[in-house]
Image (tube, rainbow over all chains, first blue to last red; front, side, top):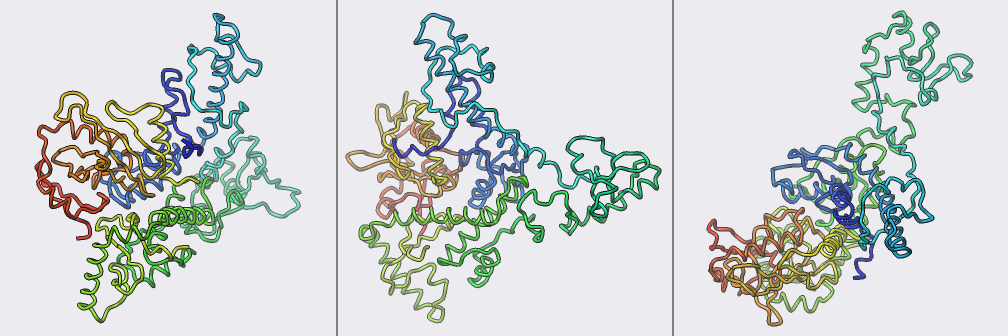
Amino acid sequence: MNFLDADVPDPTDFPPPATAPGLRALDGSFRCDICGELYDAPVTISCGHCFCSTCIRSALATKQECPSCRKTANEGHIRPNPVLESVISSWKEARPYVLGLISRKNERESSSTQSDKGAPKKRKRGVESSSSIDALDGDSLGPSRYPFNTPRGADATTPKPQSRIKKLKPKSDNGKDITVIPSSDTEEQELTPLRGGGNGNPKPDSLVVCPMCQKKVRYRILNAHLDNECKDPAGPSDSAATSWSKIMGGPAKNGQHKGKHKKKDSDSDDEYPLPLATYATLKDRQLKDMLAEQGLPLTGDRPIWEQRHQRWVMFYNANLDKSLPNRKTKAELKKDLKRWEDERSKKKKTVVSDVVHHQIEYKVEFARLTSLAKQTRVKHPARPDSSASRSSPSPTESKPTLPIPHPSASGPSDDTIVVDSEGEC
Amino acid sequence: MASISSRRLAKELREIQSEGCPVGISLLEANDFAKWLFTIEVMGDSVYQGEVYTLQFRFDSHYPISSPAVQFVVTDGKEAPIHPHVYSNGHICASILGNEWSPVLSVIAVCVTLQSMLASCKKKERPTDNDRYVRNAPENPKKTLFHYDGEHYNFKSTYLQD
């Protein structure tokens, strides 16, 4: 089916368990039960179930329970799962490689069964086989040729060494402030020469060689170190202020992790999730201000603003559940938001393509709503304001809206019938 | 490119194609990510023995966060099974299609649930409020808020817009 041609990787890329035990299940267990993708910003909720942060946030916005076990859950239960996150990023690298190995193994087997039947198949190697495939040769696989559609990115080059692992280290390792660090290649680079450096004093956090004991200590605590006769002082007193200011997002950031990611040093509240809003209690003005505060566009009407803001909060908070190096910038998140809105407006337009048919089909409903609207207008002549325009169509409109307000929390999800979609960008 | 809903549906479809449907369920039509048709048949001893019904799924852009609209097809000579939870217009009163829907459920999971709903039925009868419901029922069963009355065979339905 051609609409399936889009590359949507899923566990069936791997051969069934009979051929490749566990692989399909392994790939499946790395996937979010909601979206079916490899976990993106995996989080755990109180019952222990794991989802993509965005997925569980949108699910909880609809219903406050775990989608898997139905235990009560809410946004406050969401905890990032950095271990799973790094598992996933490794698997993302390994996956095409494993698939490549499998498809090459299949090719080999099929060619060998064709060329000489009866010969020991497993030992037969194609010309392209390299040492990297040796691992598979011991497997006792039959000549099964499962026709799975594999060869994407089927290069057998070894994965690039991951640089993330190093970045994942806690950024302010206070233990290192005091302990004397044995010489190692990585730390060597941070070592600032004490003498003859040419650029004045080293930075407070730079490692310098103690003139007495020849060990490396931070310049900031060098004096304390010397005063203490080169024993490691258990003096957190000097670093307490800095560690607090680090916790509070103060200006204690220094050269050590500058430039490792694009985060601006200035807005330290980037670390904090945005609060959820109860849109029903907000005035248009307030909602607009909230959008403006986040730098979001004000196009569209009130329901669109609400959806936009709600989605933005989800994307934003989900992004914070990623480990620092994997996070997206605000600009990237805004692009995601734009894409999400575009997809939705596309869908809406197709739904209402046949307006005439729609009007005929819902003629009775329109009449009922119109009369309803007329009644409410008589009842509240003084308030022809937002609430009226939202929930009941005014009879003067050329195209009647058919709002069937969803009393459940899934207000924004009720988009199956929207006629006045011309306000969208 | 593809939105979350269509990617998720694509995965479900590939799984159906590679691993097949459970016994008694088969994919009839899936030409896009908006509407799928399945045939459903109760296997073994039941009041529906030998009867094959057609089940229609419609998906919106919020799937799987929002549930699919599921109903039996009652056009082109097809009929809905006579069941205390199934209205003669094909609408189904099942909690997992409404407030018990969970985004981890799938199309196949819904099919299996409905299959077992039919299988457990002892007596063929329409819901008590069938006529009243069918007269004013919205086109999309998701617009109906079904009320579960506690006892299995007694449902009342109201429309969301009421």
